[in-house]
Image (cartoon, rainbow, N blue to C red):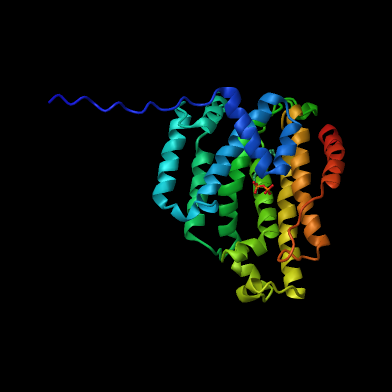
Length: 310
Ligand SMILES: CC(C)=CCC/C(C)=C/CC/C(C)=C/CC/C(C)=C/COP(=O)(O)OP(=O)(O)O
């Protein structure tokens, strides 16, 4: 008997561009109040592009950190990389991709930082300890410094920021290192804020060599011991994170004028978490350090002034 081919289920149509960006907006707003606030200070086209990038990063992070993380294997990440290649080839596979494909058309960017971020998630899959700061720094580059590189393509470079006559004929300066530094600073801040939460999952991101340096053991950390050894260790970590913020600050003036305020704002808001950790006397075990909304609002005009003057 003639076998008719089974009717194949047509794929449901993907979201329209507006719907896709709206989806990205909602996800960014839901998961990162700080960065979302920063994006609201940008012109609409840039703002939407940052949402699309944020959502891709979030999805990548969720593979190892999210509710489905137990099911994630190295193969899952290989498949996610293929998914990424499809997006870069201009073929969206789901609704959020529609926005990213459009963003990549408007703001062409290199695929390498995206691949590097997946490599960062691979590290998370295999490791729950970092021996040295050098190892941790590589991890921070991969999971956050890469975001700085991706965002830079959207933020844009101001070719005229060099004003002194002897600077005029210099080649265009692209503040790549500074963009990476901001990502690393944010990630180090995140690590300090989330020490307790990570310990609850059996993870220690603080370099073990630093724990040794302050004679503070892994067991102390799992027990949430707060004493002078811990405070010294935390002071040391905070100081290191602040150096990265300072490096990042130097790059902001090379960005397009309409990107400087949002970047200053995001930097100050995130750096503010370090101040809160200090105010909480380094207790990151029993309370989560966050910048209250009123204080956030106070940062905005200061960030604006810095964007005009520094
Ligand atoms: C300084 C120059 C030249 C350019 C700026 C380049 C940029 C925008 C760098 C920032 C990169 C960035 C946003 C990295 C993300 C790092 C990070 C730790 C994000 C944490 O995100 P969530 O955990 O989702 O947020 P919450 O902390 O709000 O929960």
